[in-house]
Length: 398
Image (spheres, rainbow, N blue to C red):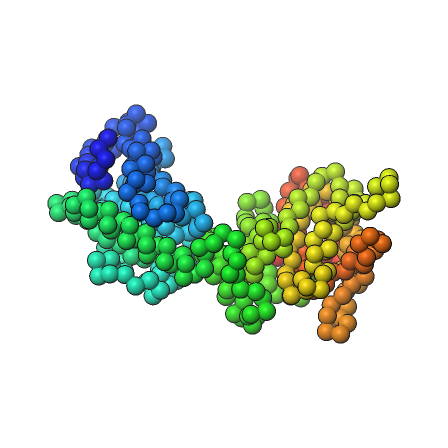
């Protein structure tokens, strides 16, 4: 294969329409897009970022618009979501577009338009880069969706194709704009050290911030989803997210916590997968071993940090994943009783002790601890008993 981007792209534009008449699986064009072109582009990118590059000519059948995407893994590794740089070929193979675009599969039209305007307003680009959707890729529905996903682009014509140097310069310039935008919206660090804390917001501002943060990570939830979760947690710091598997219950909790600075790395976010064999609270809260020593459970470990005075201004999130894989009344009833004991004293919400052991002292549910459970309602899970349902759903259920 030639090491020239210009020669490779020109070759695709000259041969792709005829290639589509051939048997899909047997044609070498797939290898070119999936392996050879990504390797070639990696050699030409001057950025120090480790980009993931994927190309496609379709899945099982030829795509009318083949593409080649360049993605920062901190933002997305899937072309179905998030924003990235992507080469898009027109259906008639007369034009190639270098674009700053978004995934169309998991992004609503409203969110796509908002993101495009945000990119265009924040990043100052040269006149060579267009900031509009005034172009066409073809007449298919997919072509029209791709056009709407584009925030900025450079168009190349088959009959007046640019030089190798121009193609490389344009690619690296677009990557600079991409990295600039990532920095401007605060997603250039994985651990999100600069995440704003809840006390920096009023209620309206924080909901907007959380929604924006989650969207920037490449996931779509409506404003109403975020508002409901936020208000439920503010009303009572125990919320159940129910729904069928794969709807994003776990993901929204993790990203919600991350948006206000609570991560696994800093110990402020803890996911606890519930096991089917849980029959009491020991797996969650802890137990006394045969030596008489208290062995804290994962929830207690979080409370030990959250109860320290120096941490009272930090938010701690505990996610009980698939909490009805075991009978909730067996392992969770004691904790529910403690939740019901919460009361306001001198401006702070306190509770009866969750753990009242001499080694740990009285660990309380302060108002900096939020517990969220996810439940799947299917044949693999247990229903809630009437007693537990009353306690739980007087809190919050989404």
